[in-house]
Amino acid sequence: MAISTLIVLILVLLFVFVAFRAFVPTSLTSELRRSFESAVIHLPELPEHVPLAFSTAIDPDFYETPRLTSPITKYLVTLYARQEAPGRRMSPTGQIALGMAFAAEFSHDELMLWLVSKAYLGLGCFGVANASQAHFATPIQDIDLSRIALLAALSKATTHLNLERSPDLVLAERNAILKGMETMGAMGPHVIDRAISMPLQVQSPLPKCD
Image: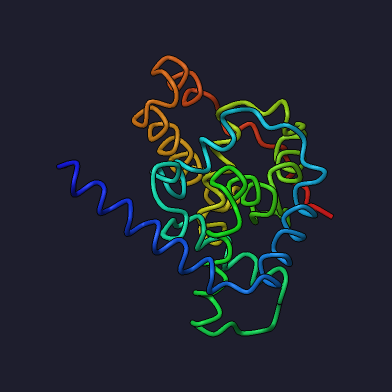
């Protein structure tokens, strides 16, 4: 890419960012900031492979692309609307404003932290800390690569990925995420092969989150 083209692209991106930052009401960003802090305040320090697994599952290019257009930002918009305003239908304009607010207010790392702290992961569980205890009886600080890849798989489609009815499908999706992490260069092939060789390791019977 020519240097002049790159400069123009950077200027356009800066203009867009400033424009949508000005469009987003301060009250909305303040509300989102409070919700974010409430969501992550009790979240322990996470192993490095937790955000890697979730970005691989939902948006492999998350850390290299604008926050506004990321599927993870869209995921959080839907999640926020369902959890913070249940029963209230959000208009397309409201969804756009909410997406702009997320992108304007939060860094990539913060968006990922919010995602893993609030995503629905089956068994009535929201967030990786609760889901890790329910599925594996394991604190999230101690979760291994194969287990977190399973939770990341569940974040994509808890409706058709059911551990009790279709464990083989869940296993295949978990392994696809692990292979995706290898393709991204996030983990070496020996580490990935060892994780793929592991069984699902879930509790039996599976409990529900409170």
